[in-house]
Image 1 (tube, rainbow, N blue to C red):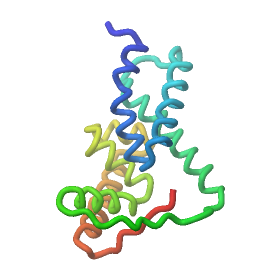
Image 2 (spheres, rainbow, N blue to C red):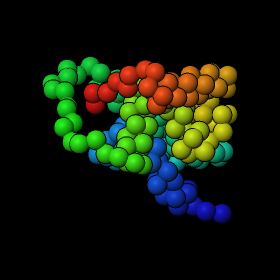
Image 3 (cartoon, helix red, strand yellow):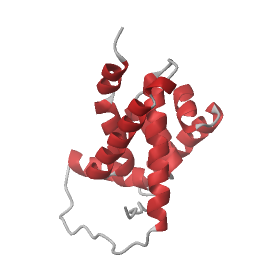
Length: 162
């Protein structure tokens, strides 16, 4: 049977991928993963078994929620303007998807990323977000509709300030 620390270590790439998708900032994502790992390893005795992946995602999600609340209290100093030429092909499609994801509310984006990117079940996402499974389904439906609308050009893609 794998050791707790070994099991946590195998989850690092997935945690990093999810954190980067949530934050859109490599440094913030790495800090978030590090804080998640520290908290998980300190609370090893509190983990009573079950799905380690869902437990770690719950810690990361809660830490990100706290980070966003803290950032919301700070004043925005300057807006970033990207003057780079527009890419073409798959790079442009990737940027369009990233912009569409940025228009989603945090709970919808998180649910969509956990299901689509990380392959978690609706039940796991419901546990991570602390909501009923029906709420997860609603968030996913609204997120998919919003993404589709933005990609079809029906709604303008708004840039979020980090």
